[in-house]
Image 1: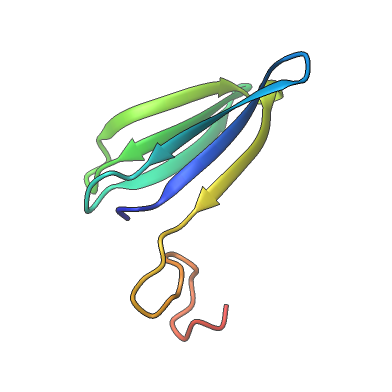
Image 2 (image 1 turned 120 degrees about the vertical axis):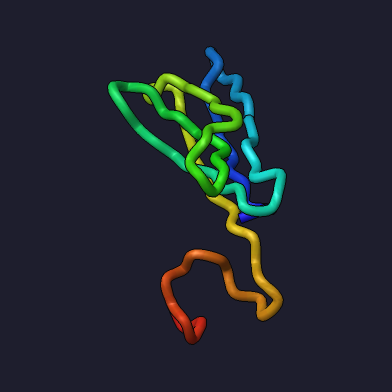
Length: 87
């Protein structure tokens, strides 16, 4: 959903870290996360499943992967699986 974004914190060596963000930039797009063969992939995807952009990171370098879902008009997060907002 437009406004959803994922924050990725990566170890770049020593005591340094770098933060990357991947966001759903248009209506109907979503952010998907995959972990395959030692690589974490974060992709912006359209309704039809077409990948717009992908960020790839070595999984042993990823320190944190934080999803930030957009809130709807009622203040509930999208995709929480509940209809009444109680979780």
